[in-house]
Amino acid sequence: MAFPVLLDTNVLFGAYLCDTVLRLAEAATFRPLWSAGILDELERNLVKRGIDADRAARRVAHMARAFPEAMVEGYEPLIGSMTCHPKDRHVLAAAVRSNAEVLVTFNMVDFLPPSTEPYDITVTHPDDFLLDQLDLYPGATLRALQEQVGSYSHPGMSLDALLAQLGRSGVRRFASEARRHL
Image (cartoon, rainbow, N blue to C red):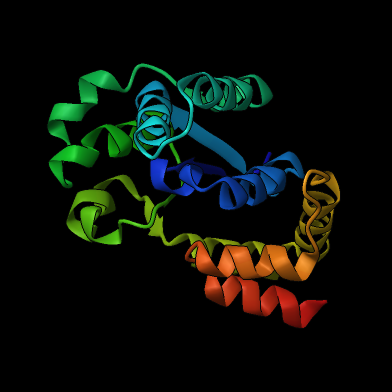
């Protein structure tokens, strides 16, 4: 079974990055995890950024349907005992409850080692996570990117344009390394 990875809201927010990460999950390079709190935060933030509420709800519902085993439950009693940044205690509690090995987030400073080491959870930036995926599963990663661009028809997108978009999304080193592999 693929290793368990909890995805923070900020990794799921950007459409292209979210699509890339979840396509790798579909390829079974890792097992995605999230909580109702994470998905609620995602939907709220999408609406706050101008996405129509119905469209945001559909996106979150589609993610939940596509990965029903990703939902972490029963983490709420742990929230109060977490010592990370208060606004992210629900995220770490879900990671602990699910026995996640890795927590992927852009907010590295909110999950300092003293808060995660007792649970043996590695906190990783999305750029580093995707670089690891490319290193461990180069064929699956490149196929996922090619399938991703192949699925965009209105408007279409080239692989180079996707990598440029991913670079702007905060995973520049991954985009550069993926380009080098092509």
